[in-house]
Length: 491
Image 1 (cartoon, rainbow, N blue to C red):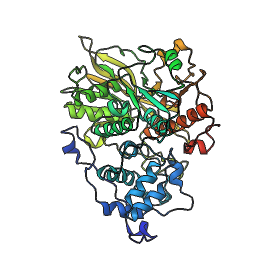
Image 2 (cartoon, helix red, strand yellow):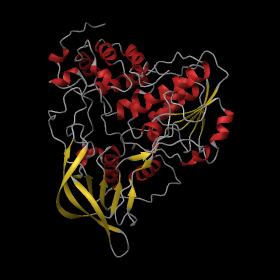
Image 3 (cartoon, rainbow, N blue to C red):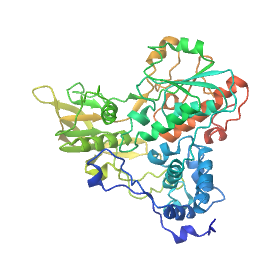
Image 4 (cartoon, rainbow, N blue to C red):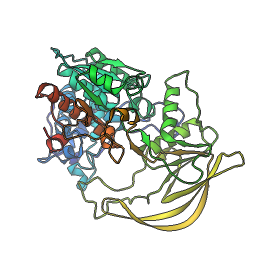
């Protein structure tokens, strides 16, 4: 075992796992990241970690991952122990290692005046090594309890809850309305950002651990929630928050104005070889305009480019962020600074500070342009829009518009007949035990938090598993997440 020097941050510069060249990767739907990385480089990157007395990176991670621990272990070439430490807080590190925006990195102490440790790349390298060496295997429980638990939804939250509950011996069944397990990890995130074999091998692991899966079953319509509650000792609603936020302006109903998520789901089904998929929305040869500057918008841009769009424009209503941290946005807060997305590197035109006012159509009733105005915003210290200054009005040509401006809550209408309480923001109401107003019915993930990121969904799944375990048995050996340890839940 090699000796680790404490001055790695002085001897090595930041070197993350890179991306394939944009001009090459847009010609296929393969993952955009470099497939290979050098272990000695990741070892050096792990050595950059200063093993701080107060590891602020851990507070930046919603899971409270043991980041200094596995950085140190990688720097000593102890990859298997690093994987063990990584799995201690994160059921699916490849989900986060490939797709997470890594809020831990700007919280890294080095980020005060240097480049942060490549935490996300090290995480990915650990789990890649684990799969390559056959270290990730099924871990079925040694004993079974008499309790039956139903998980509704098979995204990262539902799968994390299922694995945690199964590992303490409960009998778990996951219900998925779609034809494949994985939720938005399967159909919502494009293949070129997260290859679906990564979901499939985790599902295979969970099945070997004893978890049952029921696909093509929508709770609320195919199977009433009340009946599910009668047949199971506890139920967790981990249905996500997929109700899209709409834009209510004249011309919204014109042909060619579509939501972004169904567009992505359709292409993912096509890439999966689903012969029943009819491509109703195709960007090939079209002038595409994407409304929304977030992750879904970026994914729509990149998908349209790969489909062969003639031109792709992405519009963000917000003013472009500064390149340097504003004075009112100090470390370790998440930086309110501009960073180009992977999609922007692939050839889109980007417009900031544009407010859409009206869609225009041609003589056939198909959208042909969007009319709007340039705006400049004044923000609060938390980057909340306060007021705007209006500039000139302009038209932008487009014959396909994809709306990707976020999500407004859970698709909870199938449960309204069961009197599940819904909050004003469209999420499922829960108490401090993560239980809904119905006894034995819990909710977790975007269904109760609103739109969030994968790492938060996994944390929610782990938390609700602990809540359900306590509900069933009166106690739990399952570890609490960082949010719980900080007093977010009351047990």
